[in-house]
Length: 413
Image 1 (cartoon, rainbow, N blue to C red):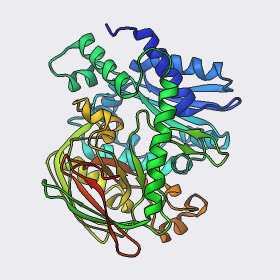
Image 2: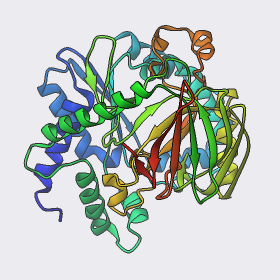
Image 3: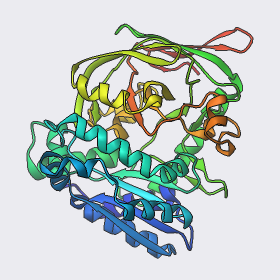
Image 4: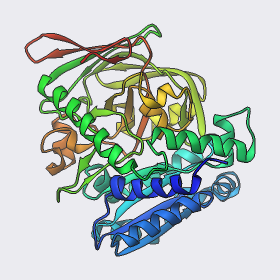
């Protein structure tokens, strides 16, 4: 049993709602969680309502049923999006509803499922929830993601443990990397962490790099052009009303957007990627003028190819994120098989959509305007990890000066 588990779980719920979501009196919360994650979901709902939330709208998911549907349901159900669900997401946007997601699915939940079914549903779902996801990516409302162990996920992370022993070990790991000790001071620790991250982001913005050049011993040799007026962000973000929130719990990254047509070279993944209920291992991508022109994976290549090909924008990058190799998550020595955690153990990139506010004024532009300033457009956004212990990143300023950004996997400043 995890020592002081009740106190730590309550501290986590307060952290997610008060710092992650930063719920304001009168706002509504759309709370999504697998049914196995009910204990944390219930606490978060309670904290939100105690802090004056107007309502909490629960969005339960059962991973068992999700898998069964993919395996056995009529193919037509993956080609049509229910009208009532589309209207629900449009209504949530109209109401300014905030979003809290609690994740904990088996990283290989959809192993063996026809990848065409997965891709078809993702495309249909993306097309019909575009208003919701566009609003979320533009930070028009607060949103945050937390995690709750499930048996399948915990046993994947700790293969030498079973059942409750594995779940307890994963809880301990989550609490540790989220700076939760049970003393009730996680909120204060997180605010200090957010401030420190913001100071480094400010320095990156002052450099105003034109390009970043990545190299390491895996074979990565990649040059990324950054848009004019790009913005590095990290720690926390703000809605148009000035409400601060933290999208990922935990987070160690500082990120911006690359120019969608300005990426060239090859990049190797440094860690496995949990993608659509499957694992992709030991893969690389080749880029020409921004486009992914070749992918290869030793395991899960079919799923990676389908994701990269989901729509036109999926074959271009939308995010570049810097994370020191000596981050708390990497130093834990744990591979979480979950992007929320693994992306914060490693520098990463994402193919698919860019966050509009990564270019000054980008959130006020329409789709054509965003693309014109270099921001990629897609229904997809998939983070994959590229940071290694020997990663070098050299930034070139607008006047041609080369500045070491990463040396031996960590920030050079």
